[in-house]
Image 1 (cartoon, rainbow, N blue to C red):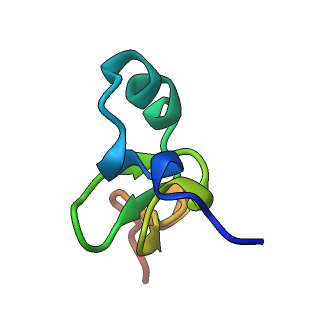
Image 2: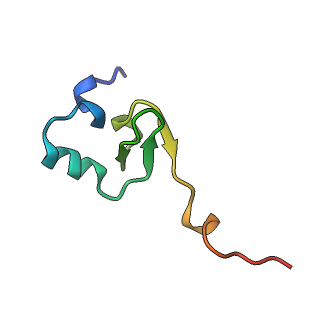
Length: 60
């Protein structure tokens, strides 16, 4: 499926629409840093790490 550039966060001029696409972000664009909840809305998706891998995990 071909993605339209108008669906990419970096090309959206409507701030309200951009905000709704960025709510509860799970991915970030590796090119421009735009954040989205859907990989289809960024040009170069980079998945955020899961919350379980963040924080102060102590081993030993």
